[in-house]
Length: 216
Image 1 (cartoon, rainbow, N blue to C red):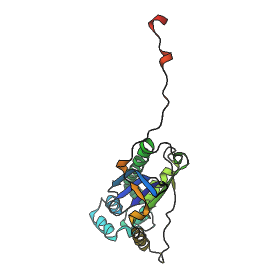
Image 2 (tube, rainbow, N blue to C red; image 1 turned 90 degrees about the horizontal axis):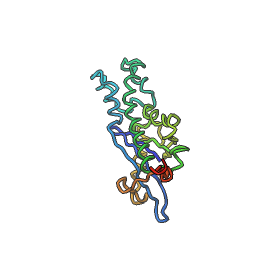
Image 3 (cartoon, rainbow, N blue to C red; image 1 turned 180 degrees about the horizontal axis):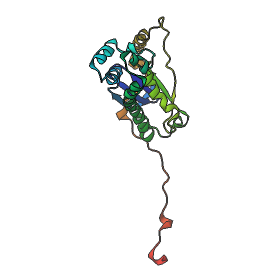
Image 4 (cartoon, helix red, strand yellow; image 1 turned 30 degrees about the vertical axis):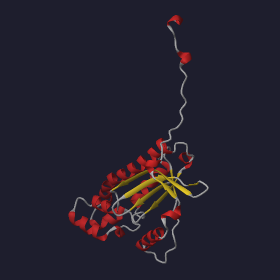
């Protein structure tokens, strides 16, 4: 499984597995990365050309985006779609690099034999900034663009919320998750406790290919 959590400060990306050893569920963490690419830093990046616009946008917080494309939000700050796209591209590149790094290391070192590499790794997006299209675009870019590291993005199973406000939904889902004791979830195996597993590669036998001086 691949999970990406977009918060205010950080973007957390992780691959993990789930299996039952007959006693309890096991959650081995394969590869994880945490980078300062959350919504706060997205806002700062997008309006870095104008301090006044940056202050206004940061004051509004992540709710200023809601489900609207970044370009539409930035139009309120007299930034054209083209200029907004130019500002978005470097940030998108950094987000995609983190996703690629996690997937590449998982496939090459952790679980190279998984059938999910062929059919699509189940992927989930969560966190307060998960509704921002820019992040979703970066994750979904691996749906079809990468044959080797294909993701299959699936919606999270969330509790019903008697509100259409995205902020209310985010807060309730966090509270819902924190209502569980970690010991009741199963055993979480840290990344450093898992050994690398490399694909078995055929070794060519070169003994019969050797030409001695008597054969010349």
